[in-house]
Length: 352
Image (cartoon, rainbow, N blue to C red):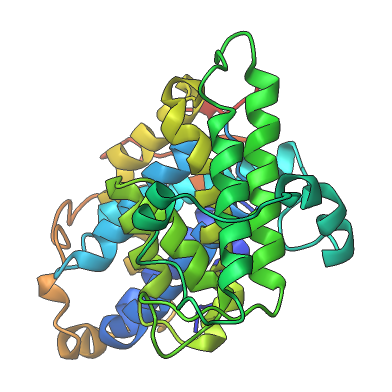
């Protein structure tokens, strides 16, 4: 279960409160709360997947890769957590400034109207090559869902064939539309009560595993497997709703994988914020820890019993306590004076 307060701060692009709260959670009880932080980061990656565009998809891939690295780390690296939160907030801010229709919202009936033409076949059966390629995904021949599975695979693979002759400069709008159509297809199929026997999850016939199987067969890319691992991380059926956006984001990746040059990288304004958090991360941590102790939120005894010495960089800059006010849409300010004199430096984030 994720932390609602932390989730809300991040999706509102509130870097300051997100960093403060995650620090509080770690210092209070890093063994107990680290799993909650992990679940929250995965849920935010999923939320971003519901609105991410083909243009910004590289940013999302970067985030899911860093989230996966966070899950794998044995030690808590506080600066890396701050950087991940910053990137999550920056991408959430994209939606705040330029809202679009998110997946999972449109009624299923309307979704069907949008996608039905992609599955209109007179002879909906796979040829030998496709049957062989998708053998690990297809249900048994005598399954009620077998013909439906053939139709779905045909529809998706035929749509992807349309990408081959499209130029990213001349046909960018069409590529964006195809990415959105794939999101609609995965949105529709994941919300329908279809059941597919599958080899990916033999205890659950939910259509989501059939769709993940298609993704993994189509492209053997590292980030596809990473995203699948995030979806599966400590998975329970209750987690489906808060993670389904990972599947929607991967639908956009089907176009990106074929046309990788169409996606942008972090722009200069975004890099400036990320670099600044990297620069002052441990100083910021020190300030937050001091503030939490001053307000008796965290005690020295609690830190000791939680073995906080295992966290990287905790004893750095003992005599340095910065002041910071971080807001993605406004200013990052910090005190850079060892003598306590305020020298405020500002970094503007002007979204273009």
